[in-house]
Length: 508
Image (cartoon, rainbow, N blue to C red; front, side):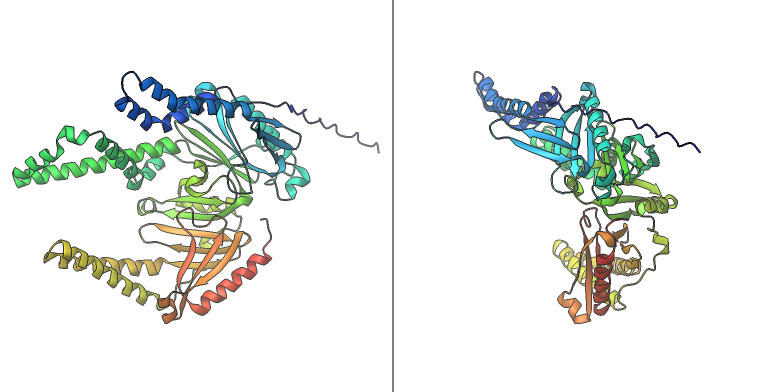
């Protein structure tokens, strides 16, 4: 038997370790960013400065910012080494940061319309250390970004990745070389459904109204005189005018919400590359980020009443480390899947954790006396609201109790019925909510702390609450915070979770 010839392995491409600067258009973007922050001072200068001095004042405002940005641009340099990314900042006082390639978790990017015009992209380099990004390269050419990304993924391999630094690229192949598997592509119709949430457009309405008020638009329209004139006319006409105005305001809120949602989440895609998830979205500004599976700390499934009625749900995740979490996190990390069909939800959850199966969970109720406490609290709140209505409208405000009391008692009953928890082989699950159903999942190997708490009312009734902390829980609108448990049940569950978390393996 003849010996097989050794397989020839191609040597890795030589690393171009030259020191480089950011793209020249960086100055344009930085000047524009400063200009946006100086809009109000510039407007004040134009209105209040004399005709022969306004150029001087504009120079005082803009010249220091321009000089500073030129200094920052010339002082920031970076280079790629075999096993690290080196970023240097400053001239007199140099700050040199060495970021091992094996420790890099994410390379996130965003690209606005202006970025596309220049052929550049904003880049964030993150590790699992938490806090701010390890490096922000604003801006790089698209070609240079691809080169940096490919070099980083090629450098995350072998024993270093197995040691817990890279998310499962142990074969040494660049992550981008592996075929991406599509998990979800949110349809435009689902985004429109998501945009029907009035809270998304309400903030924009307040901004527009505030600007209009400052500019004196309402004075120019003589709104107050129009209202007084309408009230002096026939009552039916005034009623119809009020209804039309309210309908127009509601339509504006919905329209702004739809436009904002479409602009931000347009063409939302979730893909899987090995042990990483890649999320991309955006119409005007295109965002892209990677979410390593091993960094996912907490999973939240949100079902607002309209989405639930149409068989849809939202998935959000929280991760450890990275440049900010929650609302300060990169946009794409705030959404794992904006909307997904209810029948496709189990498969997506198993992508996050192979044993994550909510249908198989053994749901447990709250303490038997919890409903009595919730009803008492509902009565107290109803009486307080009625007292407020009575102060505003006498004596008819007292009739508000006929509305508040049944409504709050119904809410208490529904909440008690729908609040459940489960101890599963992979962690603990908690669901609650009436109009918006919320389900949270904390994994055993991600639990940071478990604590119980007792209010004076809890102690009186022999109850306690249980809270589970992970590195990311609570920043996506939900957390594991179970109230109204029997004291011994809460303590036993706490001890069980602490013991299981200590024995859980550090990776899935």
